Length: 179
Image (cartoon, rainbow, N blue to C red; front, side, top):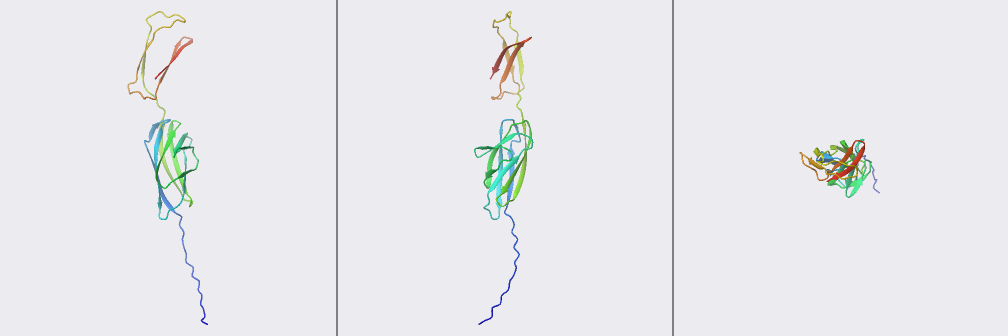
């Protein structure tokens, strides 16, 4: 019988977590409250892939909602996302600069963050209003004619409207919505 020799060799193996690149951009970076801004994401695996990914966002003390793949999400909710490029929308509800931080976590436990700032302002339309005085005597409970001239020198947004209330000392006399 031949003698058998046995020897143990320890080989150090360093296991690195799977890695990926994550970027975010938005266009435009200014919008009116209530408008949705397109946000583009790029999530690309480096080396061996195969992880799954979840995204969540924070927007400080501002109020806004995030829409992706037909669903609406609030800050902190976990959202499953694919690798590659994808698009979502963010709607600012409060008037302010929304500093939005997006965090992605892989199933391997690797986290990456990216931030954008979108400035949301309330829509206000500048206009001039001229009201003509009636050319007739005015009596209680009797209609009388008015004419209004409204001029919006910077143009008029179709979503905007003008709300007019007529007051005489001590009385609200009428309300008109002008589209």
